[in-house]
Image (cartoon, rainbow, N blue to C red):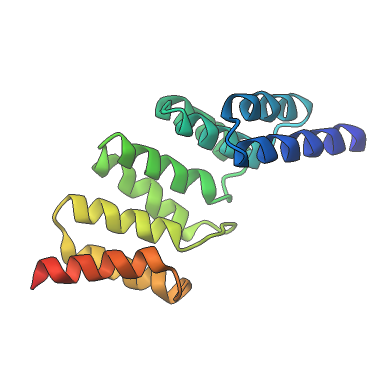
Amino acid sequence: MKDLEREAEELFRKAYQLHMMGDIKRAIEFYQRSIEKKPTAIAYTFMGWAYSMLGDYEKAIELCLKAIELDPELGNPYNDIGSYLIALGRYDEAIPWLKRAIVAKNYEPRHFPHINLAKVYLAKGMYKDALVELENALKIEPNFKPAHILKHQILAMLN
């Protein structure tokens, strides 16, 4: 069993390396091979991310749902589903997923779902709610420049 886990981990690392180099299709192949050796929530989540980079948000969501089945405590797939729904313009559907990411036990980077929720609220014209979420994000990650920029953009709109 340990050999399969080690092989799966090596395949995942190779997939991630290809992913970061921009070779998305080959990365997906390696994520799939890793999952065939030993399915993990993180491998499904990252393969979903790769599909999202190809514009296949429905497939990405499907893979994140598989990740959640394997590990409901992992926050990444909840946030990712929320972000894919945002990309599809399905803002109301994104909200519960992002809120689940915020309270997930195992999640890094924890400020991302707050940023994504702020984007949803901004798109819906809920500026004060967006500012609250940006403040929450900045409490977690005070130096996250995109949150500062978005906060100042909203404040400028309110003036």
